[in-house]
Image (cartoon, rainbow, N blue to C red):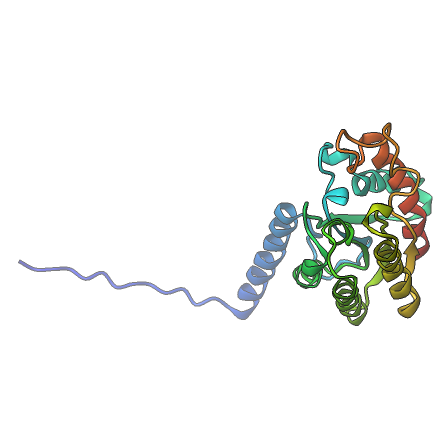
Length: 232
């Protein structure tokens, strides 16, 4: 039995042919990446938006309300409703987790650095207070997060929280002062009380009396929105 071996024919492509084929692959591949990842198809495209990251707990995550009715989503809608000539485009990421405390703030920010946020709305601390955790540790956790943000050129908006006086006046005062002290020390944009005009109002909160309802989130959005505008 004999076997016939067919010689393989190799085509030698000219440099010019290789160059234009490579360009096609790069451009076509870039378009596919842009189509499926939601980023500009050209790697060198100019950045046209501001990345805003929210790090919070169940209040900012929107426990008990639809995602589109959370205050970060409503803030996004407020920017979208602005006239085009204003030229303000934002991309909002809500990195909030229900039940979280300030202990996880630093690690969460490290993870979200890959998204290259320009502005951080830091809205943590409520669960620390409700659990009666150390205000000193809470301050240290927030401070480390603020320092990391500043080291990466991120503008920080610190949202203050308050707890009911039944936790004791001394603790309630120390808790409230943590936010004001950090805002002053690091020259931060400071929202004195995230739940201003919402806390304690049964018409603006869910049955638990803690988490804002849809109407409450709308008021929080109106409270936070001007602080973000100033940073743009």
